[in-house]
Amino acid sequence: MGIDAHVHSAGLLFAGQAASAFSIALLRERGLDASAHRSRKMTRDLLLGADLVLGMAREHVREAVVLASEAWPRTFTLKELVRRGAMVGPRQPGETPAQWLAAASAGRSAAELMGSSEADDVADPIGQSQGAYERMVAEVEDHVDRLVGLLWAVERERARA
Image (cartoon, rainbow, N blue to C red; front, side):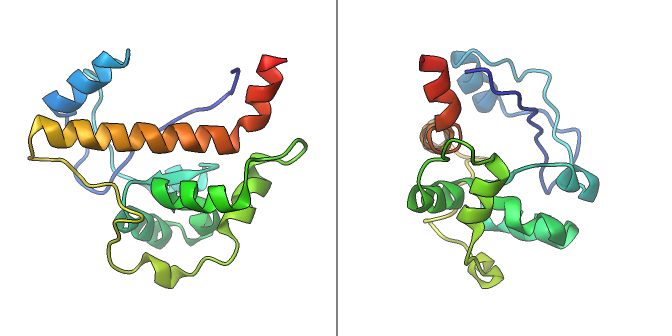
């Protein structure tokens, strides 16, 4: 599709941890090698340099906004952004990703970040069975596919032409 993107991973817990064996195996099945991946802690600089910040749970978004309040308009849980993006509709020709994200962010309230929500949070499978990892990966894949369809529909159509 020709999208120029740089993706980084960071979290709330310890830096330097290897991915779980289940994660490595599931990613390998999808043609991705995560064997050398090591966790890193989310930082203010990383957040400020990001065009889009996606968390798997509200907790991640809360912590990101505490570290860098300026990132709030472009910081969502994956599920929240897909839900809000579906209401906004696909990005239109001439609309930048930043403009689309601003539309998706319109009307949000920090109070929405309180607690946890099945509507917003992807369940963390750490310490659970391989089946829990498989369910999480399927859920993330579905939401990422939907997000790509919303945010990069313009490029997808251009590539087809």
